[in-house]
Image (cartoon, rainbow, N blue to C red; front, top):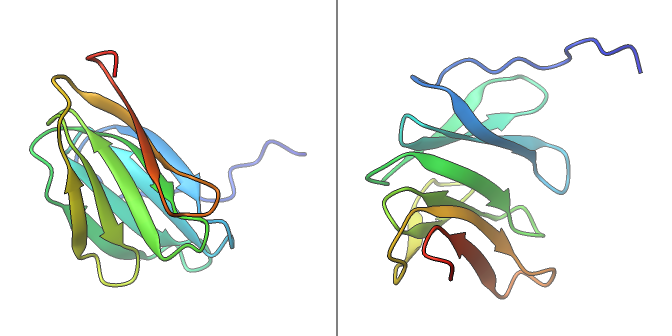
Length: 120
């Protein structure tokens, strides 16, 4: 309620588009114009993983309901699903013909929805 900054995460090489807490509150994920997403400890503020595999800016990042996976959306016309513990890219979702601005998990974690510049 004081408006005081409680957490400052520095480490990206360009500005951020998105930041989100994991459902359990233990992690923070950030998405950047530098083409990466990062996963941070919300307690130690340490960068735990850098997710680098997109060919363009990463516009958004979202955790799965169980905090085990992360979805990223990128200007490279893809979304990716990553392991939040190993940083391994588990799946690349293609098919868009424009930047993907958002990727989110369904409440049960079984599906991912994306929103793109192509209107799909």
